[in-house]
Every structure is written in C-alpha cells, then in structure tokens.
Length: 291
Image 1 (tube, rainbow, N blue to C red):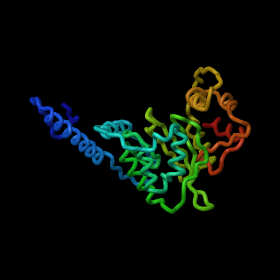
Image 2: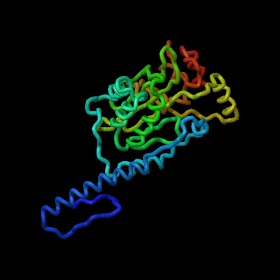
Image 3: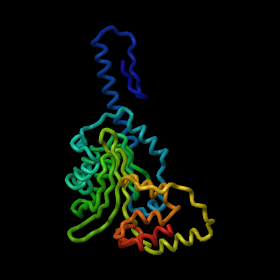
Image 4: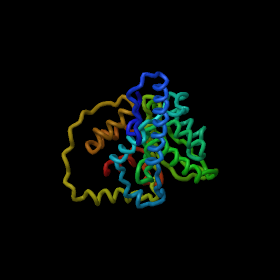
C-alpha cells in the first residue's frame, strides 16, 4: 500500500485481496503524489522581490531557517525532470553550455534550461535580492523574468572560469556591442547526480567607494583592541581549492606577509569596491594589510 505523505485526504484501503484493486490504489496514490508536489511548488516557490530596491541590497539578510523550510516543502513528493545534466560531467562544462550556448541569462528558453539542470531542492542566492530562491520552480521563475527584461539588450561574457568538476566559479561581464556593463562573480555547486544544487551570484555594487573603503575600515577599527594572532601552520596549498581555504580560514588576519608570498608579482586583483583592478603585489598588499 502506498500513501502520499501529508496528503490532504489520505486514501487507505486495508482489506482487499484483489490484485486489481491494489493496482488501482497504487495508481491513485501516484496521481495524488504528483498533485501534492504541484501544490507545494505553487504555494511556496513564488518570489516577488524588487531587484532595484537598494535598501534590500544593503540590508540583505539571508534567512537560513526559511531556506531550509522552503527546501523541505519543495522536495515533498518531488520527481526529477529531464535535463542536460547527463550530457555534461564537469561543473565547468555545464556552466559554459548554459551561459554561452543556451543563453540562460538572456533568453527565456535558456533560463528554463538552467532550471532544468537544477536539483529539485536547489538554492539560488542572488545578492541583489533579499531572500534566496529555493526549488527548481522558483529558480525558473526568477531567471525567466530577468531574461525577459534583458532580451535583446546585451549578453553575458564569461571572463574567467575555474576548472572545477563538482563546483566552479566564474567572473562575468554584461556587454552590449562594444560597451561593457555590470560585472560580477558567480559560484555554482553540483550534487552527486551532477545537478546544480547551489548558486551564489554576486554582482558588483552600484556605487564604488574606492580608497574610501580603506578609510572606512581605518575609522571602524581605530578603537578596536588588537588581538593576538592565532597560531597557524605555514604550509604549501596543494591546489586552488586548498589555497582559498588556507588564505581565508587560516592566514587571514594573522600574517599578511605569508599571504603575499602566495601572490604572483604580476597579480591582477579585482575588488568590486574599485572601478579599476589592482595590479601588482604593492597595490594588493595595501588593501590586504588594512582589511
């Protein structure tokens, strides 16, 4: 006997010796399961946030508890839909296909292709929005709405992309003919089935304080009591993934000299608080020493 979890009307038939009757019960249960999934999706996947509301951008607080609730609601009775995931093994290849071939940011068909490549419990954090989009339906609605507004107004150029298999990050720029517009960075993570399970999209801020960022940091920390550096073991990271963890989790705030050892002499460092990139160790060190 199959039952639909938390279905509005549970159908229970406990006394039947007929195989046909059991088959009918199984069919009815399956139909209710699919209906139940549709109800949850329509009830909890709709998002209506004004992406141009700068106060939401500044005061953005992602409610993790709410995201978890949405995740549980979205996956009740979920059934995976066909996608292009099976054709792509690495995160890098999948993202290049979706952005450059499917045009997921500028066409509604491409936006739907991106959603189809997502897990049913995907979490998509657009840092211009006040809350994450949770579930395939919510992501599809968000991306298709944005794509419709951007259609025939330019395209996204992938400037840099990491070579990750399970996850990758890529830097992008909006372009229109010869002109360049908004820039940003996006991180994408896949699950074990090679479906997109997490996205964080970080567009550059509208206003760029530049060196005022350093002055602000100085003002904020001038009365702060210096803290004793925590001991850490100096080591050589084994790859890019390990390097990021080493810099942010172990070295940051402890030893700026050790951090600078890991930068190339001709480092190009983009901080979205600045209009132009920082070039060379001297400029990067100036930023990292203060921050």
